[in-house]
Image (cartoon, rainbow, N blue to C red; front, side, top):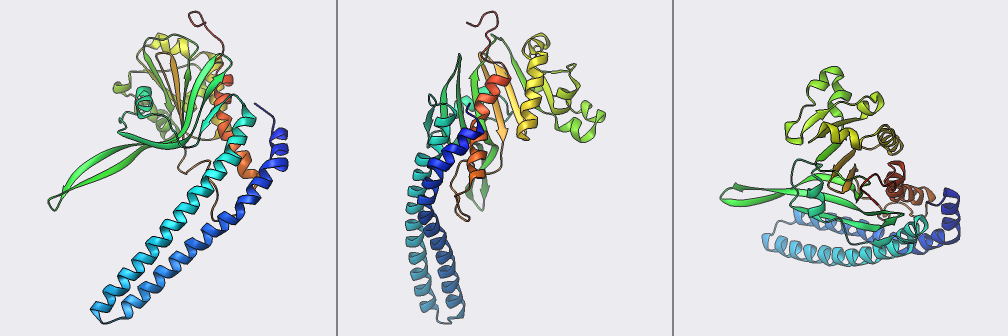
Length: 319
């Protein structure tokens, strides 16, 4: 991973000019959005002040057509702007981190990979997302993307079926080859109960559906995470003192809720975010180094996890 000095150099020599060149598109989208809201408001005011019902219908039809046309035009401009941002800015940041990484702005981790992790007890029925990055860091292959995993509920209301989609997880999802061969499944989850309720929370940690509760000797690790596994012995084989220290450091560095699972020959990691990432600004100027730096550190999470968790070191049966 390159230094932040190299990122600053890239920003000053290339990215700043690229972002400045995109500003006219951003301003156009912002103005069109404000104009559409103003037009809709004007038509609404006219509508409520007209007494003739026939004329009201005419105003509604004209207003809806104008707003829909304007909205469609704005969406076209936005997706053009977004594509240029991904091509000119995001791809260059990823290339700086590692030129051998493969980036696809419109792809995401597949729903089967999310469900295979078994990090979340609810099974996803669909996944949305973007900014897919794949590659190899030394000996370790990985896949990574922004992801919104969802399940649906179907209910009947007034004789009509109503389908609703609910989010299971939203954030960054990552999986990589693990450096040990394991037979069962081990989950490392945020320890919400103990953080909120102290020792009493320990009694609430039992979760038979995920396996046995594993208590470890690292007190700092226990403050951040709770561990469940199909095997107490295998959990300790995976979670070495070095591994636990590394997971705590990663958690502290990024300050987000982090979920891990170790299954088969893969390690899975989910980092919770409640906002879209790696997207261009609309309301404020996009010419901002801090935004680029934040993007850089989020993508660099890939290398941080692989190096900090020592995944490139092959143990026993791994080459």
